[in-house]
Amino acid sequence: MNNVLSKQAKTGIARILVMSGLLLGAVYAGFPVLWMAASSFKSNPEIFAYPPRLITESFSVSAYKVVLTNPEKVRFFLNSYLVSTLVTIFTLIAGILAGYSFSRYEFAFKRPLNMIIISIQAVPPITLLIPYFGLIVALKLYNTYAALILTYMVFTLPYAIIMMTGYFNTLPKELDEAVMIDGGNRLIALWRVLVPISLPGIVATGIYTFMLAWNEFLFALTLTKTTDMRTVPVGIQMLMGQHSYEWNEMMAMSVLGCLPVLILYLFFQRYFMAGMTAGSVKG
Image 1 (cartoon, helix red, strand yellow):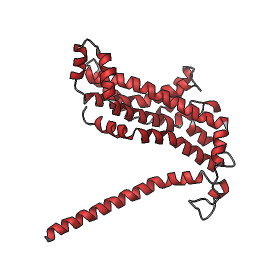
Image 2 (tube, helix red, strand yellow):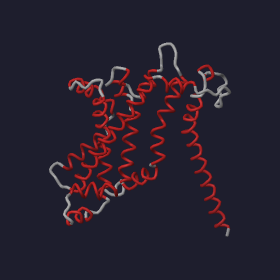
Image 3 (cartoon, helix red, strand yellow):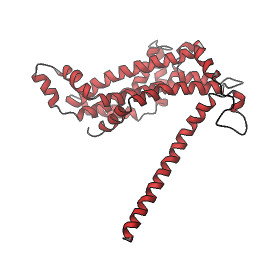
């Protein structure tokens, strides 16, 4: 009896410790976001008030009004939406086709290509900044949407191929064969049968791709020159002036910049978690 009670006590203590650790981790991760959101409703002097206060006494949406009524700042968001959406669409199409090929076909240099795709994931993006800048200038794509889209796809496509290959590997080849027996071909099997079944993996890949393109700063700063081509991360950095920082506007833009990714994740959370799990089961 004492042994049973001892085990139950140990289990209870372990649960309390785990829950406490998770709670501390949640506070540690969430407090900066909460402070950012609270600061977006303050004036600049109040942000620097001492002692600092999380809850503002003079609640104001003036920072949001400045951001949303300024055509230059609105253009930052439009640029980010356009680039991130196109990168996601093109990456998913190419990733699905390539993933299906790696999963279903045997061809020359398949293993070396797999190794190259995996190794690209291990290369720090900053080491490729100068080579890509020279390439984009040589192709006369500097300060264009195409420069950002093509560059971002270099980093998003390997992940999409790996993810979709692993997901297609979990699907039986009999599905393809059944379609071809009925008079179809590989493309029909892919787009009409496998793609609908693979929706969780596709959604997970799409959300990751959109997040990467939306949050990217270094290449967006280097490969664009004019204000009308800048994206949200660069636009936030531009609020840091030589003599003053517009902290409340920076916080407002940061909150607005978080919303698209947050909304995507909330709407597709079930598919995202299922895709991340299923894609790593077999492959």
